[in-house]
Image (tube, rainbow, N blue to C red; front, side, top):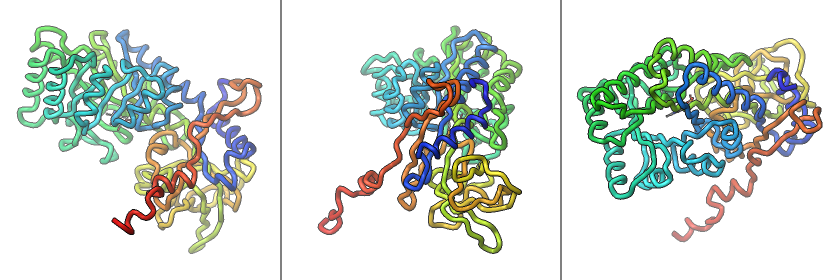
Amino acid sequence: MASERAADRRDQAVRAAVEQGLLGEAQPVAALLDVAGIRSCAAALRAAFAAVTDAPVLHAFAVKAAPLVPVLALLHAEGIGAEVASPGELALARAAGVEPGRTVLDSPAKTPAELREALALGIAVNADNPQELARIDALIASASSRSPLGLRVNPQVGGGAIGALSTATATSKFGVALRDEGARDWVVRAYLDRPWLTRLHTHSGSQGLPLSLMAQGIQVLYELAEEINTAAGRQQIDTLDIGGGLPVNFTSDEQSPAFADYARLLKERVPGVLDGRYGLVTEFGRSLLAKHGTVLARVEYAKTAGSRPIAVTHAGVQVATRTVYDPASWPLRIAAYDPKGSPKAGPAVPQDIAGPACFAGDLLAENRPLPLLEQGDVIAALDTGAYCFSNHYGYNSLPRPGIYGFVTGAETADGTAVRFATVRSPQSLAEIVAESGGAHPDTLLTP
Ligand SMILES: Cc1ncc(COP(=O)(O)O)c(C=O)c1O
């Protein structure tokens, strides 16, 4: 049923993935994406902003969160564009059919060639710093462009719980640090000198930022836009790009905070942003995808060490790199299934869920109470739809797992079975060899 809960859909999909052989001895790790979940999340994002503003809003999905062409095409079909931060991400967005007018290029290190391509295509570009703006000056002097152009500023409102993802700290590498001496005046002058600079951008950070801090960053952005427009004597800045960063709840199936919570907070704290005078761009990544992905892995062995039970599985650092290296910041929920893919019952026993990589820290969860896992069981790492498929870690030459989108029940053609579509095929050993210099085995013997 369309309304069935995400957890029920997931349970159906896990069983079907085992039955249909997506997960088995030959492929002991595989990832699933809940198509209905992604669709409804995209609709919730659109509805959340439509409820608080009549202004045109481009929701541009941060491709880094799930750089998969079929995912970008699905989001595109749901009215979501693309925020890209490298030539590779731009190529993916183009392959998915996302139009230049629905694509935004941000990144701290754009080369002249990248800028030239974006300007030729008419893709929106947010310059990161004065040197990049000078490059854009030169490029548009030599060839006209339809690209909407803006500047990224760092509102320096402070960091969140995860330092590595906090981009509005005093010394963050992103954007023009607005509170530094002379910076604000420089920004205002830069706009007055460039009538074609019509956008202003900020992104204060990702997971771990309180909503109030995100709103504070946008307040700074808004006040700066007003100041520039006043100085220009016209509405030179017509669009505010407010970035992404909505955090995800990694402790339950609940989608909280919701996009609607954030939109309402913005309406309350920074009403001018939503009063219709400015078009908007958003760049959400994690909040659109994380809850809709599940990594499955077979338990290859069950053992004990120091009396602690350990399930040695095939999912570890290669798929959940952040969790393995920084488990305190990135705890993952784990669900236990039996060898047929049915939810496993039994008393909760604290145990480690280990990955296949050759170092001791390769653990998805430590001392986690779960029904005691046995050889042949299946574990599911939940909420892994964002920043897992982009963060594949090639240690031990572990392959990138296959990724399969699924639809269940009433959404399928026959109304019952679970249907899968391949989003990304499992990486083959031949591909690993080829990516690892396999074409040049003798090159070091006779340099
Ligand atoms: C400029 C920019 N926009 C958007 C995002 C997406 O953030 P999130 O996935 O937290 O929504 C990022 C993430 O790094 C970013 O750097």
